Image (cartoon, rainbow, N blue to C red; front, side):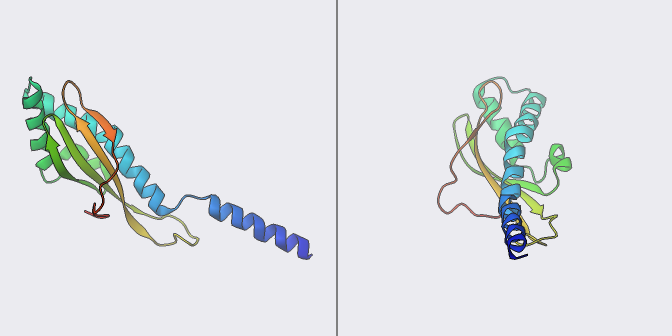
Length: 142
């Protein structure tokens, strides 16, 4: 009987440690938006502005990112970003996503956290997203 109990405890440990945490889910959601949603929204905003040159494209992208909650992002739930700098046609952005745990089990039961993904967007011809390391001091929440 003791052997069965130890097997059950061991199996439970494997199952619990094999699950992702709500923080990992939040970071993954921020990365999904940063890599797959935001570039398309930026391309659309740049095209809509009529920008042709790389500098015009960069200005149009920066202007769109400065808007408080562009409608293209309405379907993305609690997602926001902060522009951290611009160098010519490259814009550095921190993308945040709010995720609530759906888990009924510890350690994430009832938790909600901000996920973070730091990206560099080159807007020369099309918008290209490049993951970058978040600099020290980057806020964990917007």
